[in-house]
Length: 42
Image (tube, rainbow, N blue to C red; front, side, top):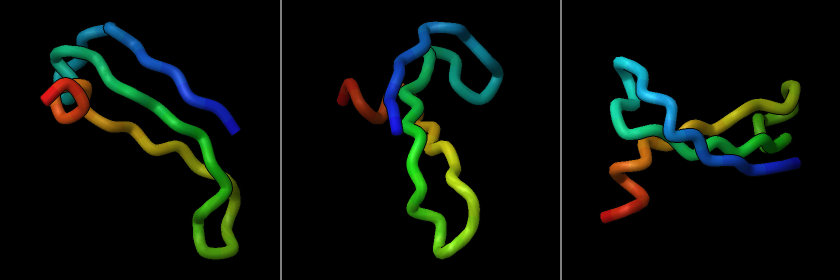
């Protein structure tokens, strides 16, 4: 498991994003959660 932050601008995340890897996916493989950085800095 891990986390990271990126300031790379994309069309979906113009101010960057936070990403977390986890294995909480209802019995399926691990996955990644991406969160718009704007939601975090509020």
